[in-house]
Length: 275
Image (cartoon, rainbow, N blue to C red; front, side, top):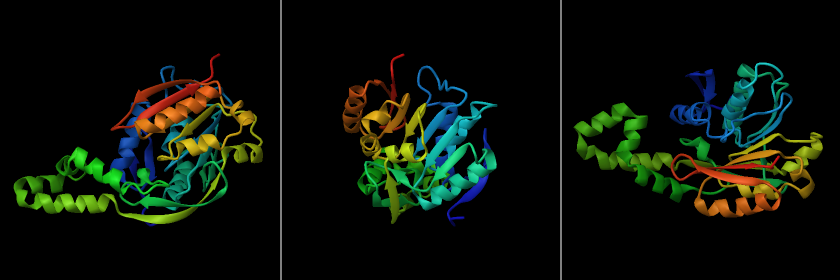
């Protein structure tokens, strides 16, 4: 098990393996309570659904999908290239889901097969990405404010800073340094069409993509014939300028696209084929 992986109980799931507790709670809130990936009509999946979870992180979306049905649970293909997240993903699937129902892959999806350098952000692992995101994370800390972050994530330190305000500049600097602490990790990437061929998939009922700024390359790695096998797609988009090319690509392949706001500047894009 990766040394950064810890364990604790998180309602409504129970015992989970995680890397960052506050981040895990926030993701559970998004997926399980706010149901950001459900769309207006919920996640009505057939009894024998095939689901692809691209950017599985520690497995919260996969566990959510498994929880929707008491019987005949969907088959989930979950992809996570980062070593720490993958270890937590494996442990969570073993603890909460039948191994035969959730098939795990320790590599990422993209527009071609290759080795790639990704950046693992130790203190905000869900934001790990193929891109260096230091500038974006600096902006996030400045936008939310160091004291607001302390109040949410480290209330004891927040109270100390309120009592000793001269510490605030030093604490703010430390928060910034901690947020952008990262390491480069070499990971394998493949295309979704390769997976469809290797796993002999004749359909995908739901494709979920949350891969921190690599959403468009995944879509470009799907052949025209394989797009015809995909019934619904849900994507977290991380900047407004990323939305247009993704929307154009999906609409050109027959999908109806809707977009809704999510946390911070993120948006959730729902794509489905008209019945």
